[in-house]
Image 1 (cartoon, rainbow, N blue to C red):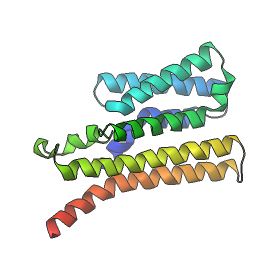
Image 2 (tube, rainbow, N blue to C red):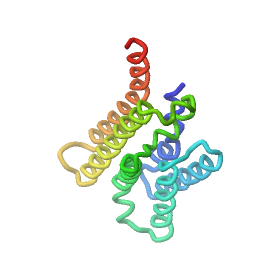
Image 3 (cartoon, one colour):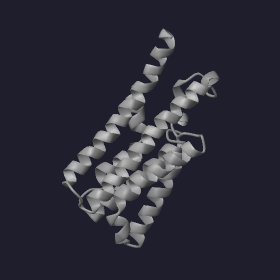
Amino acid sequence: MQFLKLLFSFAPWLSFLIIARGSLERLELGLGVALALSVTMGLLRLHRGIILWVGLAFFSLALVLVMAFHNMWTVQHMGVLANGALAAGAWVGIVRKSPFTLDYAKDHTPREAWTSAPFLRANMIISTAWAMAFTASAALAWMKMERLYVSDLAYEGCSYAILIATALFTQLYPAWLKRRATTG
């Protein structure tokens, strides 16, 4: 169940990833759908914190640059920009000692644990894993754009594998910590 919640929290980004492929019209549609989802999820408090604000800023700016100004540089660099925006948001949260995962972890953690060192440390570790994954995906998107080394499919496969591995880590690491704490 937690895995589905995790996927749901990235719904605007996932919808963008799925829709915005193959044509300028699909890119525009993907940006519009992602922005609408970000706004709706923010208003309903289903999406929050720095990742919400990064999504709102990114999708708004990209939509204006692509639709209103037909900025082809933005279109060509969209993969790098999207992953870079997520990476920047995650790293900013870490530097501010307010990892983005805190907002979601609090949903299933008793209030008295919210300020505990183990809870905060676990969220710093999980957010760092995500920041590294987004950074790696941005680098892969840049390499794909520059057509370095391997095929487009290989870049996408690597990027998806990194994100899936990070999602699995996000699910397994807290469970491992709980088992370790109970077995002493």
